[in-house]
Length: 448
Image 1 (spheres, rainbow, N blue to C red):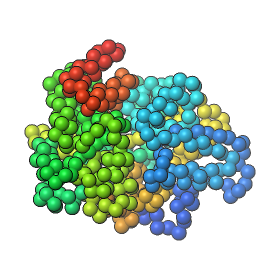
Image 2 (cartoon, rainbow, N blue to C red):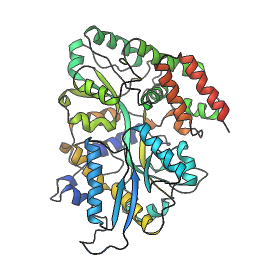
Image 3 (cartoon, rainbow, N blue to C red):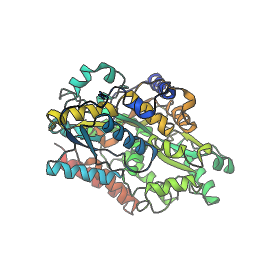
Image 4 (cartoon, helix red, strand yellow):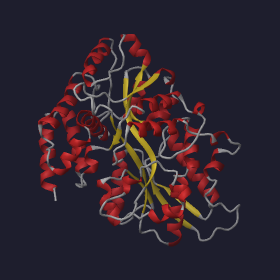
Protein backbone atom coordinates (compact mmCIF):
# COMPACT_ATOMS: atom_id res chain seq x y z
CA UNK A 1 0.00 0.00 0.00
CA UNK A 2 1.08 3.58 -0.46
CA UNK A 3 2.83 4.72 2.70
CA UNK A 4 3.76 8.30 1.77
CA UNK A 5 1.38 11.18 2.25
CA UNK A 6 0.51 12.89 -1.00
CA UNK A 7 -0.88 16.31 -1.62
CA UNK A 8 -4.10 16.95 -3.49
CA UNK A 9 -2.00 18.45 -6.29
CA UNK A 10 0.01 15.28 -6.73
CA UNK A 11 -3.11 13.14 -6.73
CA UNK A 12 -4.66 15.37 -9.35
CA UNK A 13 -1.48 15.20 -11.41
CA UNK A 14 -1.47 11.40 -11.24
CA UNK A 15 -5.14 11.29 -12.20
CA UNK A 16 -4.45 13.50 -15.20
CA UNK A 17 -1.53 11.33 -16.22
CA UNK A 18 -3.79 8.30 -16.00
CA UNK A 19 -6.65 10.02 -17.81
CA UNK A 20 -4.37 11.05 -20.62
CA UNK A 21 -3.30 7.48 -21.12
CA UNK A 22 -2.29 6.05 -24.60
CA UNK A 23 -1.06 7.65 -27.70
CA UNK A 24 0.80 4.42 -28.50
CA UNK A 25 -2.34 2.28 -28.55
CA UNK A 26 -3.30 3.58 -31.98
CA UNK A 27 -0.10 2.43 -33.64
CA UNK A 28 0.02 -0.05 -36.48
CA UNK A 29 1.45 -2.70 -34.19
CA UNK A 30 -1.01 -5.20 -32.84
CA UNK A 31 -1.41 -5.32 -29.08
CA UNK A 32 0.76 -8.36 -28.59
CA UNK A 33 3.60 -6.93 -30.63
CA UNK A 34 3.42 -3.69 -28.70
CA UNK A 35 3.49 -5.45 -25.35
CA UNK A 36 6.47 -7.51 -26.42
CA UNK A 37 8.48 -4.76 -27.97
CA UNK A 38 11.41 -4.86 -25.53
CA UNK A 39 11.26 -8.41 -24.25
CA UNK A 40 14.33 -9.61 -26.10
CA UNK A 41 12.63 -11.79 -28.73
CA UNK A 42 15.20 -13.21 -31.15
CA UNK A 43 13.18 -13.63 -34.36
CA UNK A 44 12.96 -17.37 -33.95
CA UNK A 45 16.66 -17.91 -33.21
CA UNK A 46 17.65 -20.33 -30.42
CA UNK A 47 17.41 -18.62 -27.05
CA UNK A 48 19.29 -20.94 -24.76
CA UNK A 49 18.32 -23.31 -21.98
CA UNK A 50 14.71 -24.51 -21.77
CA UNK A 51 13.15 -23.47 -18.50
CA UNK A 52 9.75 -23.55 -16.79
CA UNK A 53 8.57 -20.89 -14.33
CA UNK A 54 5.37 -20.45 -12.33
CA UNK A 55 3.27 -17.36 -11.67
CA UNK A 56 0.51 -17.00 -9.09
CA UNK A 57 -1.68 -13.93 -9.57
CA UNK A 58 -5.31 -12.95 -9.09
CA UNK A 59 -5.84 -12.62 -12.87
CA UNK A 60 -7.92 -15.69 -13.71
CA UNK A 61 -11.38 -16.09 -15.17
CA UNK A 62 -13.08 -14.35 -18.06
CA UNK A 63 -12.98 -10.69 -17.08
CA UNK A 64 -11.34 -8.45 -19.73
CA UNK A 65 -8.34 -7.79 -17.48
CA UNK A 66 -7.83 -11.51 -16.83
CA UNK A 67 -8.06 -12.34 -20.53
CA UNK A 68 -5.56 -9.57 -21.30
CA UNK A 69 -3.16 -11.07 -18.74
CA UNK A 70 -3.53 -14.53 -20.26
CA UNK A 71 -2.94 -13.09 -23.73
CA UNK A 72 0.27 -11.44 -22.55
CA UNK A 73 1.54 -14.72 -21.12
CA UNK A 74 0.87 -16.47 -24.45
CA UNK A 75 2.62 -13.73 -26.39
CA UNK A 76 5.58 -13.84 -24.02
CA UNK A 77 5.99 -17.58 -24.60
CA UNK A 78 5.70 -17.12 -28.37
CA UNK A 79 8.51 -14.59 -28.26
CA UNK A 80 10.54 -16.68 -25.78
CA UNK A 81 10.06 -20.31 -26.88
CA UNK A 82 12.69 -21.48 -24.41
CA UNK A 83 10.50 -20.29 -21.49
CA UNK A 84 7.34 -22.10 -20.41
CA UNK A 85 5.11 -20.12 -18.04
CA UNK A 86 2.83 -22.18 -15.79
CA UNK A 87 -0.08 -19.95 -14.81
CA UNK A 88 -1.43 -20.88 -11.35
CA UNK A 89 -3.55 -17.75 -10.94
CA UNK A 90 -6.75 -17.73 -8.88
CA UNK A 91 -9.25 -14.87 -8.80
CA UNK A 92 -10.92 -15.74 -5.47
CA UNK A 93 -8.91 -14.12 -2.67
CA UNK A 94 -9.42 -16.89 -0.12
CA UNK A 95 -8.42 -19.55 -2.65
CA UNK A 96 -5.42 -17.44 -3.66
CA UNK A 97 -4.31 -16.94 -0.05
CA UNK A 98 -4.74 -20.63 0.74
CA UNK A 99 -2.71 -21.65 -2.29
CA UNK A 100 0.08 -19.25 -1.39
CA UNK A 101 0.14 -20.48 2.22
CA UNK A 102 0.27 -24.08 1.02
CA UNK A 103 3.09 -23.21 -1.36
CA UNK A 104 5.07 -21.65 1.47
CA UNK A 105 4.45 -24.58 3.79
CA UNK A 106 5.63 -27.08 1.20
CA UNK A 107 8.61 -25.03 0.07
CA UNK A 108 7.15 -24.76 -3.43
CA UNK A 109 7.02 -20.96 -3.73
CA UNK A 110 5.96 -19.66 -7.17
CA UNK A 111 8.70 -17.94 -9.11
CA UNK A 112 6.49 -14.84 -9.34
CA UNK A 113 3.48 -14.02 -7.18
CA UNK A 114 1.06 -11.18 -6.59
CA UNK A 115 0.95 -9.37 -3.24
CA UNK A 116 0.14 -5.99 -1.75
CA UNK A 117 3.31 -5.23 0.20
CA UNK A 118 3.15 -3.30 3.45
CA UNK A 119 4.07 -4.52 6.92
CA UNK A 120 2.21 -7.78 6.41
CA UNK A 121 4.67 -8.58 3.61
CA UNK A 122 7.82 -7.76 5.58
CA UNK A 123 8.54 -11.34 6.66
CA UNK A 124 8.19 -12.45 3.05
CA UNK A 125 10.66 -9.74 2.05
CA UNK A 126 13.12 -10.96 4.66
CA UNK A 127 12.83 -14.64 3.88
CA UNK A 128 11.55 -15.55 0.42
CA UNK A 129 11.37 -12.48 -1.84
CA UNK A 130 14.22 -11.38 -4.09
CA UNK A 131 15.61 -7.86 -3.77
CA UNK A 132 14.70 -6.30 -7.12
CA UNK A 133 16.61 -3.04 -6.56
CA UNK A 134 19.64 -4.09 -8.67
CA UNK A 135 17.36 -4.79 -11.63
CA UNK A 136 15.53 -1.48 -11.13
CA UNK A 137 18.87 0.33 -11.03
CA UNK A 138 20.22 -1.26 -14.19
CA UNK A 139 17.09 -0.65 -16.28
CA UNK A 140 16.08 2.97 -15.80
CA UNK A 141 13.65 2.92 -18.72
CA UNK A 142 11.64 0.25 -16.94
CA UNK A 143 11.92 1.56 -13.37
CA UNK A 144 11.58 5.21 -14.34
CA UNK A 145 8.08 4.66 -15.73
CA UNK A 146 6.54 3.61 -12.40
CA UNK A 147 4.41 6.01 -10.39
CA UNK A 148 5.87 6.57 -6.88
CA UNK A 149 4.64 3.25 -5.51
CA UNK A 150 7.81 1.27 -4.91
CA UNK A 151 7.80 2.17 -1.22
CA UNK A 152 5.01 -0.38 -0.91
CA UNK A 153 7.81 -3.00 -0.89
CA UNK A 154 10.49 -1.01 0.95
CA UNK A 155 11.30 -0.97 4.68
CA UNK A 156 13.35 1.32 6.90
CA UNK A 157 15.31 -1.52 8.48
CA UNK A 158 15.64 -3.72 5.38
CA UNK A 159 17.70 -2.61 2.41
CA UNK A 160 16.20 -3.18 -1.02
CA UNK A 161 12.91 -3.28 -2.94
CA UNK A 162 11.00 -6.54 -2.83
CA UNK A 163 8.24 -6.03 -5.36
CA UNK A 164 7.17 -3.88 -8.30
CA UNK A 165 3.68 -2.53 -9.03
CA UNK A 166 1.43 -4.35 -11.47
CA UNK A 167 -1.78 -2.56 -10.54
CA UNK A 168 -2.95 0.71 -9.08
CA UNK A 169 -6.24 0.54 -7.27
CA UNK A 170 -8.62 2.53 -5.16
CA UNK A 171 -12.14 2.02 -3.83
CA UNK A 172 -15.13 4.13 -4.81
CA UNK A 173 -18.88 3.82 -5.31
CA UNK A 174 -20.42 3.32 -8.73
CA UNK A 175 -24.01 4.48 -8.97
CA UNK A 176 -26.96 4.17 -11.35
CA UNK A 177 -27.73 7.69 -12.58
CA UNK A 178 -31.18 6.73 -13.80
CA UNK A 179 -32.24 5.31 -10.44
CA UNK A 180 -31.08 8.41 -8.59
CA UNK A 181 -33.05 10.56 -11.00
CA UNK A 182 -36.05 8.37 -10.24
CA UNK A 183 -35.92 9.17 -6.51
CA UNK A 184 -35.04 12.80 -7.14
CA UNK A 185 -31.88 12.77 -5.03
CA UNK A 186 -28.15 13.15 -5.57
CA UNK A 187 -25.74 10.37 -4.57
CA UNK A 188 -24.72 10.63 -0.88
CA UNK A 189 -21.81 12.98 -0.27
CA UNK A 190 -21.67 12.12 3.44
CA UNK A 191 -22.27 9.08 5.59
CA UNK A 192 -25.12 10.93 7.22
CA UNK A 193 -26.93 11.24 3.88
CA UNK A 194 -26.80 7.50 3.24
CA UNK A 195 -29.83 6.70 5.39
CA UNK A 196 -32.17 9.15 3.66
CA UNK A 197 -31.10 7.93 0.22
CA UNK A 198 -31.53 4.33 1.31
CA UNK A 199 -35.06 4.89 2.55
CA UNK A 200 -36.07 6.32 -0.82
CA UNK A 201 -34.70 3.31 -2.66
CA UNK A 202 -36.21 0.75 -0.32
CA UNK A 203 -39.60 2.41 -0.85
CA UNK A 204 -39.43 1.48 -4.54
CA UNK A 205 -37.97 -1.99 -4.03
CA UNK A 206 -34.35 -1.15 -4.89
CA UNK A 207 -31.41 -2.27 -2.73
CA UNK A 208 -29.38 0.85 -1.84
CA UNK A 209 -25.84 -0.59 -1.86
CA UNK A 210 -25.48 -4.35 -1.50
CA UNK A 211 -22.10 -5.80 -0.60
CA UNK A 212 -20.92 -9.40 -0.68
CA UNK A 213 -18.93 -10.40 2.39
CA UNK A 214 -18.69 -14.08 1.48
CA UNK A 215 -15.34 -12.88 0.15
CA UNK A 216 -14.68 -11.30 3.51
CA UNK A 217 -12.13 -8.73 2.44
CA UNK A 218 -15.06 -6.47 1.52
CA UNK A 219 -16.05 -5.96 5.14
CA UNK A 220 -12.44 -5.14 5.96
CA UNK A 221 -12.36 -2.67 3.09
CA UNK A 222 -15.49 -0.95 4.33
CA UNK A 223 -14.13 -0.56 7.86
CA UNK A 224 -10.95 0.91 6.38
CA UNK A 225 -12.92 3.40 4.30
CA UNK A 226 -14.95 4.50 7.30
CA UNK A 227 -11.89 4.87 9.52
CA UNK A 228 -9.90 6.84 6.94
CA UNK A 229 -12.71 9.27 6.15
CA UNK A 230 -13.55 9.72 9.85
CA UNK A 231 -10.10 9.79 11.46
CA UNK A 232 -7.54 9.79 8.64
CA UNK A 233 -4.29 7.85 8.88
CA UNK A 234 -3.80 8.98 12.49
CA UNK A 235 -6.12 6.26 13.76
CA UNK A 236 -4.27 3.58 11.84
CA UNK A 237 -0.96 4.72 13.31
CA UNK A 238 -2.43 4.82 16.81
CA UNK A 239 -3.73 1.25 16.45
CA UNK A 240 -0.32 0.03 15.30
CA UNK A 241 1.51 1.80 18.13
CA UNK A 242 -0.97 0.63 20.76
CA UNK A 243 -2.02 4.16 21.68
CA UNK A 244 -5.49 3.24 20.42
CA UNK A 245 -7.35 -0.04 20.80
CA UNK A 246 -9.51 -1.95 18.38
CA UNK A 247 -12.28 -2.00 20.98
CA UNK A 248 -12.18 1.68 21.87
CA UNK A 249 -15.22 3.90 21.36
CA UNK A 250 -14.03 5.07 17.92
CA UNK A 251 -13.68 1.61 16.44
CA UNK A 252 -16.83 0.22 18.03
CA UNK A 253 -18.77 3.17 16.61
CA UNK A 254 -17.59 2.32 13.09
CA UNK A 255 -18.47 -1.35 13.47
CA UNK A 256 -21.83 -0.34 14.90
CA UNK A 257 -22.46 1.87 11.88
CA UNK A 258 -21.77 -1.04 9.55
CA UNK A 259 -24.13 -3.22 11.57
CA UNK A 260 -26.77 -0.48 11.54
CA UNK A 261 -26.48 -0.24 7.76
CA UNK A 262 -26.94 -3.98 7.52
CA UNK A 263 -29.96 -3.97 9.84
CA UNK A 264 -31.51 -1.10 7.89
CA UNK A 265 -31.22 -3.05 4.63
CA UNK A 266 -28.74 -0.60 3.12
CA UNK A 267 -26.20 -3.35 2.40
CA UNK A 268 -28.68 -5.88 1.04
CA UNK A 269 -29.50 -9.35 2.29
CA UNK A 270 -27.45 -12.47 3.04
CA UNK A 271 -24.15 -10.61 3.17
CA UNK A 272 -22.07 -13.57 4.30
CA UNK A 273 -23.41 -16.04 1.72
CA UNK A 274 -23.53 -13.79 -1.36
CA UNK A 275 -20.54 -13.43 -3.67
CA UNK A 276 -19.54 -10.40 -5.67
CA UNK A 277 -20.60 -11.86 -9.01
CA UNK A 278 -24.20 -11.80 -7.80
CA UNK A 279 -23.88 -8.28 -6.39
CA UNK A 280 -22.40 -6.95 -9.62
CA UNK A 281 -25.02 -8.71 -11.73
CA UNK A 282 -27.80 -7.17 -9.63
CA UNK A 283 -26.30 -3.71 -10.01
CA UNK A 284 -26.03 -4.12 -13.77
CA UNK A 285 -29.62 -5.37 -13.85
CA UNK A 286 -30.83 -2.23 -12.03
CA UNK A 287 -31.76 -4.07 -8.83
CA UNK A 288 -29.39 -2.02 -6.67
CA UNK A 289 -28.57 1.66 -6.86
CA UNK A 290 -24.91 1.64 -5.83
CA UNK A 291 -21.97 -0.73 -6.13
CA UNK A 292 -19.15 -0.50 -3.57
CA UNK A 293 -16.19 -1.69 -5.63
CA UNK A 294 -12.60 -1.00 -6.57
CA UNK A 295 -11.09 0.37 -9.75
CA UNK A 296 -10.62 -3.24 -10.84
CA UNK A 297 -14.36 -3.36 -11.56
CA UNK A 298 -14.18 -0.71 -14.29
CA UNK A 299 -13.62 -3.05 -17.24
CA UNK A 300 -16.61 -5.29 -16.48
CA UNK A 301 -18.93 -2.34 -15.94
CA UNK A 302 -17.67 -0.60 -19.08
CA UNK A 303 -18.76 -3.62 -21.12
CA UNK A 304 -22.15 -3.93 -19.46
CA UNK A 305 -25.56 -2.89 -20.72
CA UNK A 306 -25.63 -0.27 -17.95
CA UNK A 307 -22.41 1.45 -19.03
CA UNK A 308 -24.05 4.71 -20.17
CA UNK A 309 -25.94 5.11 -16.89
CA UNK A 310 -23.06 4.67 -14.44
CA UNK A 311 -21.48 7.48 -12.43
CA UNK A 312 -18.76 7.34 -9.77
CA UNK A 313 -18.49 9.07 -6.39
CA UNK A 314 -15.90 8.91 -3.60
CA UNK A 315 -16.77 6.87 -0.54
CA UNK A 316 -18.86 9.30 1.56
CA UNK A 317 -17.09 11.17 4.33
CA UNK A 318 -18.42 12.27 7.71
CA UNK A 319 -19.99 15.70 8.02
CA UNK A 320 -18.06 16.36 11.24
CA UNK A 321 -14.67 15.32 9.76
CA UNK A 322 -14.07 17.69 6.83
CA UNK A 323 -10.27 17.46 7.09
CA UNK A 324 -10.18 13.72 6.40
CA UNK A 325 -13.20 13.19 4.15
CA UNK A 326 -10.98 13.01 1.06
CA UNK A 327 -8.58 10.35 2.33
CA UNK A 328 -8.99 7.42 -0.06
CA UNK A 329 -8.39 3.76 0.48
CA UNK A 330 -6.03 2.78 -2.32
CA UNK A 331 -2.52 1.89 -3.36
CA UNK A 332 -0.62 -0.70 -5.35
CA UNK A 333 -0.52 -4.41 -5.83
CA UNK A 334 2.41 -5.99 -7.58
CA UNK A 335 4.73 -8.86 -8.31
CA UNK A 336 7.52 -10.31 -6.20
CA UNK A 337 10.09 -12.86 -7.34
CA UNK A 338 11.24 -15.84 -5.30
CA UNK A 339 14.82 -15.59 -4.07
CA UNK A 340 15.10 -19.34 -4.61
CA UNK A 341 15.10 -18.80 -8.37
CA UNK A 342 18.58 -19.32 -9.75
CA UNK A 343 20.32 -19.34 -13.12
CA UNK A 344 18.01 -19.67 -16.12
CA UNK A 345 14.90 -19.71 -13.90
CA UNK A 346 15.88 -16.39 -12.31
CA UNK A 347 16.66 -14.84 -15.68
CA UNK A 348 13.28 -15.99 -17.03
CA UNK A 349 11.40 -14.76 -13.94
CA UNK A 350 12.97 -11.30 -14.16
CA UNK A 351 12.29 -11.15 -17.88
CA UNK A 352 8.60 -12.01 -17.38
CA UNK A 353 8.23 -9.58 -14.46
CA UNK A 354 9.64 -6.73 -16.54
CA UNK A 355 7.47 -7.75 -19.50
CA UNK A 356 4.24 -7.74 -17.45
CA UNK A 357 5.03 -4.39 -15.79
CA UNK A 358 6.26 -2.53 -18.87
CA UNK A 359 4.52 0.53 -20.25
CA UNK A 360 3.72 -1.46 -23.40
CA UNK A 361 1.98 -4.12 -21.33
CA UNK A 362 -0.17 -1.54 -19.54
CA UNK A 363 -1.01 0.11 -22.86
CA UNK A 364 -2.21 -3.27 -24.02
CA UNK A 365 -4.33 -3.67 -20.88
CA UNK A 366 -5.91 -0.28 -21.50
CA UNK A 367 -6.49 -0.99 -25.20
CA UNK A 368 -7.94 -4.45 -24.56
CA UNK A 369 -10.17 -3.50 -21.63
CA UNK A 370 -10.95 0.01 -22.94
CA UNK A 371 -10.14 1.59 -19.59
CA UNK A 372 -8.74 1.12 -16.10
CA UNK A 373 -6.05 2.84 -14.03
CA UNK A 374 -2.42 1.76 -14.09
CA UNK A 375 0.78 2.21 -12.05
CA UNK A 376 2.95 3.80 -14.75
CA UNK A 377 3.30 7.12 -16.52
CA UNK A 378 2.07 6.82 -20.07
CA UNK A 379 0.47 9.05 -22.67
CA UNK A 380 -2.70 8.03 -24.43
CA UNK A 381 -5.54 9.42 -26.44
CA UNK A 382 -8.27 10.41 -23.91
CA UNK A 383 -10.91 9.31 -26.41
CA UNK A 384 -9.60 5.76 -26.05
CA UNK A 385 -10.69 5.72 -22.40
CA UNK A 386 -14.23 4.61 -21.63
CA UNK A 387 -16.64 6.99 -19.83
CA UNK A 388 -16.60 4.97 -16.59
CA UNK A 389 -12.82 5.22 -16.41
CA UNK A 390 -13.14 8.96 -16.96
CA UNK A 391 -15.77 9.20 -14.20
CA UNK A 392 -13.63 7.14 -11.83
CA UNK A 393 -10.61 9.33 -12.45
CA UNK A 394 -12.64 12.47 -11.89
CA UNK A 395 -13.82 11.13 -8.54
CA UNK A 396 -10.31 9.99 -7.66
CA UNK A 397 -8.93 13.45 -8.39
CA UNK A 398 -10.67 14.65 -5.21
CA UNK A 399 -8.38 12.48 -3.07
CA UNK A 400 -6.01 14.23 -0.68
CA UNK A 401 -4.00 11.03 -0.20
CA UNK A 402 -4.18 7.26 -0.62
CA UNK A 403 -3.74 4.90 2.30
CA UNK A 404 -3.87 1.15 2.75
CA UNK A 405 -6.00 -1.12 4.88
CA UNK A 406 -5.94 -0.58 8.64
CA UNK A 407 -4.03 -3.80 9.27
CA UNK A 408 -1.59 -3.42 6.37
CA UNK A 409 0.71 -1.32 8.55
CA UNK A 410 0.71 -3.73 11.48
CA UNK A 411 3.50 -6.32 11.83
CA UNK A 412 1.06 -8.95 13.16
CA UNK A 413 0.82 -11.14 10.08
CA UNK A 414 -2.56 -12.72 10.83
CA UNK A 415 -4.32 -9.52 11.90
CA UNK A 416 -5.83 -9.08 8.45
CA UNK A 417 -7.56 -12.46 8.64
CA UNK A 418 -8.70 -11.82 12.21
CA UNK A 419 -10.29 -8.45 11.45
CA UNK A 420 -12.00 -9.69 8.32
CA UNK A 421 -13.29 -12.82 10.02
CA UNK A 422 -14.67 -10.87 12.97
CA UNK A 423 -16.49 -8.45 10.66
CA UNK A 424 -17.95 -11.39 8.79
CA UNK A 425 -19.01 -12.85 12.13
CA UNK A 426 -20.65 -9.54 13.01
CA UNK A 427 -22.61 -9.61 9.77
CA UNK A 428 -23.63 -13.17 10.70
CA UNK A 429 -25.05 -11.99 14.03
CA UNK A 430 -22.32 -11.18 16.56
CA UNK A 431 -22.57 -7.80 18.35
CA UNK A 432 -20.08 -5.12 17.18
CA UNK A 433 -18.62 -4.88 20.70
CA UNK A 434 -17.83 -8.60 20.68
CA UNK A 435 -16.12 -8.32 17.29
CA UNK A 436 -14.03 -5.39 18.56
CA UNK A 437 -13.13 -7.18 21.80
CA UNK A 438 -12.07 -10.30 19.92
CA UNK A 439 -9.80 -8.30 17.64
CA UNK A 440 -8.19 -6.42 20.52
CA UNK A 441 -7.66 -9.64 22.47
CA UNK A 442 -5.94 -11.14 19.43
CA UNK A 443 -3.70 -8.08 19.08
CA UNK A 444 -2.67 -8.18 22.73
CA UNK A 445 -1.82 -11.88 22.59
CA UNK A 446 0.28 -11.45 19.44
CA UNK A 447 1.98 -8.10 19.97
CA UNK A 448 5.75 -8.53 20.12
